[in-house]
Image: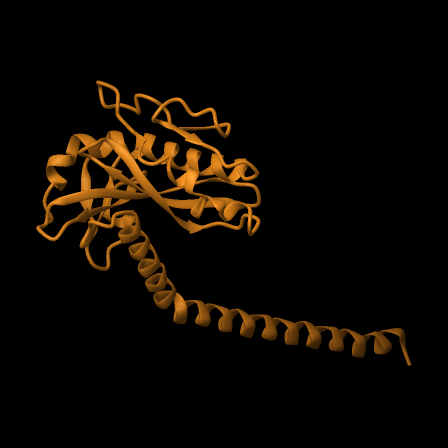
Length: 233
């Protein structure tokens, strides 16, 4: 038997194995893509329902909500059925929700904020009352903080008593007059400060940063346009 004859079966076997592995990889990819596409609508609908429930929770006087996007230029764009925030407004738009009471009058604004916590990002939804220029409360969207520690932000009475928080803008409406900050427990002296929870300071600070960062970006865009939002479209 020549050396080339001995190598040929091994080469053929290797090629067949590569083909088989390629076929398996392609089949697995097809299954994954099909499963993703098949469940995408249901996942997005579940997310929408979860956010909607959170909006009504942070704005208890609201009876209906309308989704908007605030563009970098300061325009507010209503997001219609089937639209997405990205397609409804220019790049850099910020999504928010306008809540309306039973008479169709503006009850408040809700928006998401996110900041790094102890274990992972803490995503919250906060409510803004235009009449009093305050952040009236917040709800949790998602977090992976240590159970029994990080989740104190949802049940600690002293922490929840921080709200409402002052969220007034400067005279030129370009930014918050006072940044919303989290301070050491027991040292709060101003209405825009959040008194942290002892033992959960990192998560407390994450809530403060999430609200401040989102409010700093969103409020200067929508406060000048409140006349467009005061009644349900």
